[in-house]
Amino acid sequence: MILLLLVFLGGVLTILSPCILPVLPFVFARSEQRFLASGLPMLIGMAVTFSGIATLAAVGGAWAVRVNQYGRLLAMVLLAAFAATLLSRRLADWMARPFVALGNRLIPSGAGADGKAGWVPSLLLGAATGFLWAPCAGPILGLVLTGAAISGPNAHTTVLLFAYAAGAATSLAVAILAGGRVFAALKRFLGTGEWLRRTLGAAVLLAVAAIALGWDGSVLTRLSLAGTNRLEQSLIEAIKPDAAAAGGTNSTAMTNPMAMTNSMSGGQAMMMSGKPSEALPIEGEIPSLGGATSWLNSPALAAEELRGKVVMVDFWTYSCINCLRALPYVKAWYEKYKDHGLVVIGVHAPEFAFEKDPANVKRAVSELGVAYPVALDNNYAIWQGFNNQYWPAHYFIDATGHIRSHHFGEGNYEESEHTIRQLLTQAGYANLPAPGMESATAVTAAKAVGVQAPADEAHDQSPETYIGYGRAQNFRSPGGLAQDRLRTYAVPSSLGLNQWALAGTWSVDSEKAVLRQKPGDIVFRFYARDLHLVLGPGPNGTPSRFRVRLDGSAPGTNHGADTDANGDGVIKEQRLYQLIRQTAAVGEHVFSIEFLDADVQAYSFTFG
Image (cartoon, rainbow, N blue to C red; front, side, top):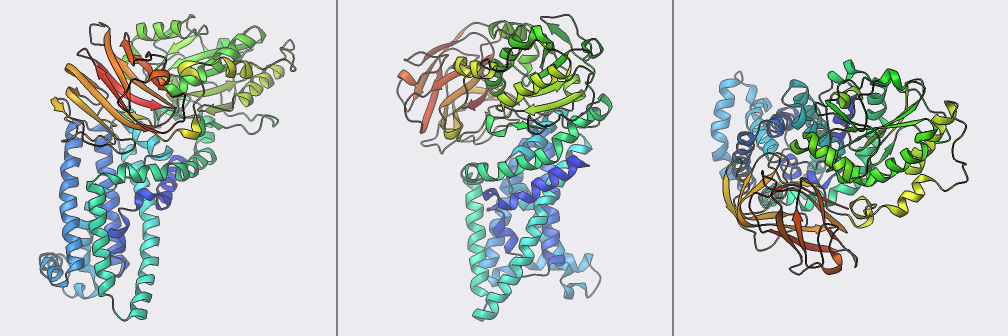
């Protein structure tokens, strides 16, 4: 119920987001009519269609994506026709005849005089708007959509999506009611409403054009990210996480379809236990660790045998940039406090299929220098036991087995270390390193390099971008993505910020793109200091060569940890590769990578 309320409030906040702008002309175009007969059915149609299509797109595979594409085309035609009726009253009368006739058949005689026959066209227009509405995927909607993709189809997912749409519809209903009064006042003041009608028609046409050009998913998304994301994150902090942590049991987690959500940047970090100086609350008991499929660096551990020790559980996955940037701090705490009562357990919960391979995880653990026990949580049993939703996520457990604090995302490292010290002291460990000594956090901040160095949040304006069609956004090669089949792609003449394209012959599945004939390219216009790409070699593991360009030239001193000054690099295993780290002034650039060998796998871009 708490999650449902959180999602509903997230929908309400969409009225503050520029991503709602393309929908507003359709909404205000009905504001002069009776709300119950026109505005309400339109909002119902919009909410039902959006929640249904979003559910299918999240869990239904390629066929659902194609259905949505065709539905959007049909919706744009319908809404363009609707705009034409606003521009021409004669055309409006002609097009309304079949709807009026249908309404007269469905509604008892005389009902049309009260405007109730308007339900039919209004519901149809609302359904069309639901096909076109593309709300910005902030923390709350990202939680729902990514959880749906992992958990698969279920009624709870659809209910959550409908709750989000209902929240948006509620705020739009207020806008309709307020807009109707404004338009009525303008009509009384100016003596005519014809120019208002035509203005709304022109606005609807502009909205359709903006959607057709993809501005709803690119330009407006960039405008929306900063303000509304902060509001949504405040809601998550205030409502959801404390309840999730308090649940802390297998039975509670198994009823929660939100098995997983996106990784969190430092700007999204959340400390859930109050200030370090405050007493730490009891948030639940440590769940079972028995669901791990295997263990590295240790025999299998049980929650019961950890009593008497302070335990830190770190949920991570080895291709997650946010996890990699937090990892040096976790390692530093382990080294500093392992002989003073602290047990660190890394729970590796995979995002991509290749991260379920124990050999891949074992290699990554060795290369990253992780010495503490790592539980492979391939079935997300431990993840669901903690009712977790983020990478990285840190849970702090006292010596009696109670969860006393948790932190989601990057950042707040000093507070986390203070929590560790506080729990160790409470457990009776009196031989801690002196408080006056330099903290492990400060030492780590100076030593973190490469992909593990802190992000440049002040200049990061590019979001995590998936290449597989299951979660792809802002793709701009002509013809769009061809799901699960070969297609030869081309890069358009220009790309907007955070838009990307393929060149060459690729096959794209729900989680990755695979180059089938060499050479092939990926191009991305981005704004950030660092650019990373999760890549893998061909199925036989043969190293694959690539060449990186920044604005058409070799990166020089702006090369990343996995490229040289000429932009050359080699893909040897499936992992995250740092391809660009700018040393000069950070700005907007066009990144391109040319793959010189076939069968390369590309998964997702991240920035920092």
